[in-house]
Length: 583
Image (spheres, rainbow, N blue to C red):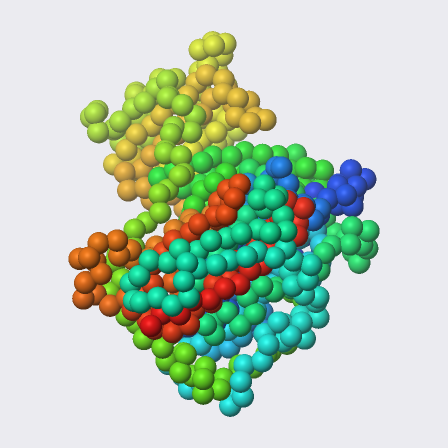
């Protein structure tokens, strides 16, 4: 049995897989060819500003539109967001949930990031059916104050440089809906309330799908309303590679996919059972069968953070099986050019001010509270077991085979063809079946001899479900579940064909928080309040008339730009600009 399992090979591909049938999920046929020709997705992405220091937070809003209009339904429920440099080195990767066509969140720029111009791009998994030139891409500047500032010239128009770098048209800078924004006055004192009124003169409020508002220090929003993308040509989506496969939209949260093939010769395997377990406080168990080209796909729902995942197949004595897992993030890029940063004296003064603001925020800002986790609480994957045996409740027995015989009467160990086989009595039929699923610490295992060799002192409990269980498309007549005391599989050695990977799921969103000074005692507080970003609202609710927003100024004097951006229901972009001064 052990030799059998060693014939399974698992590869986690972190680069684009070679070989057409290794690259995606299902083959292109007449049905999904028509799907691609008639349906396109596009992501609009806006950030709170364009210039940051390493270590600062980037706040963003992303809108997902279908066929250039805002949909009444969400096709993709996940967007993929990346920060990378001109060498295509990724600095940050995140997956964010789409709710009613909008994804909002933030990420922190690593403190070790060097000074330079960087790219942010956002796309859905479905968009991977098209060229990466269709992914929305935006340029930002990151300054690392630990190193000397480069250049002597003034920063050039970043939008022009983006166009030169990407070879793509500006999208979001023409034919925009004008948004009027007006502060209740132009000059404010420190820690004073500000009221902003948003007015839509050229469109009805009900036509606006979403607006975001940013109030940031002048100079950090050089050209805030532009980003680059190409609108997909529906007739040319696959012409460059007719063998390319179809990426399925993620309609039920985060997914993971791959293919099962023979190793030699390289041939897809059809109908092979693939097992996936999500470990941790909210465990999941999935079983699926490979399709006609050997592919499989699992939907993991709306898990957050990074999870340890087991994935594997039951090995075969006669076949050397290879399991390939698709990269969750795209490694396809358009041609990029390095755009050097050049900064004049004025910007150097601004950067020094930003550094003071950043350092004071690190020292004096209130402790951050974790966002509420909306992940469902842990439940028994298969319901309550019919038999549950805690070994600590009984006298010690020499081995697990004796324990099954003495304490777990519905589970039977027999020798069959020179190896141990686990059987379970099903009371519904009064028949004995070969056990169909053995889980050890929530992970499927197949080597019964290796399991029985584990000392009983390492096992906490054994559960048996001996009724028919409908598990997705699978009918399981019995299951045996074992738990080790330490959660370490009791020393069970998984063969080469079994792998554990750390898989990134949804990045939980955070709410932008800024100090309020509604009382005199707060206004008189000696805690300094220096902020480059005064206000950020990723999703402004538009009423029938003018919309009013409010926030407080900080201790930082200077000019601040107010930028409003958004999308209408028919896919047009909105833009408005204002300013205030703090004296």
